[in-house]
Image (cartoon, rainbow, N blue to C red):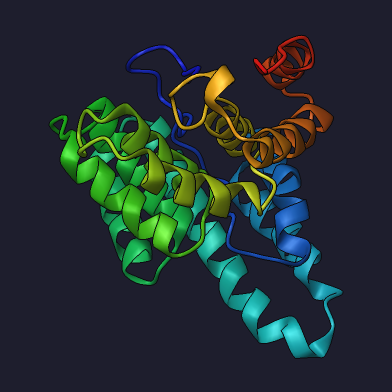
Length: 231
């Protein structure tokens, strides 16, 4: 199937954005990141505080805890950017023990890229798996890619599809594309081998990815439309 270039960092760069919230905080992370860059950490904390102040009472406690972890992630991110890698790692390790998936992904990135630590691909993947099992779509997609590549884990396209689907159902467009291609090619056997059901699944997922602006998905949809199964 079509892949990113070998060695590409599919998790993205180390960052401060916290993905665990289902409410207002998720929509406000860009605001407090911008506040941090323009007015410093204290300003960012004030922006984040305003974001949760209008929440309904029944979600206040949950969002308060999430907001606190988001601020801590921001502190670690700031430390990392200033070159204090050990400090950032220790903060993220504490958050990771609480199940914070952004912290887990940042730790995975550190070990994947060898930034502030010795490069360790297996350890990086262990953090990815933990985040994936906690339903983080970015990590679920990355774990699917690990099974698809077969470099660290034994190649297993069925397992890749399992994790791609979990991420795709949460709207992760790269996972939607990957799942579409897996189905379109009958799990790597070829376009002409795919069953009608697999082609239908492929088109459905590729359309979802395309609707989010995934250019390769648009190209692949055109390819499928012009590829006829042999009689």
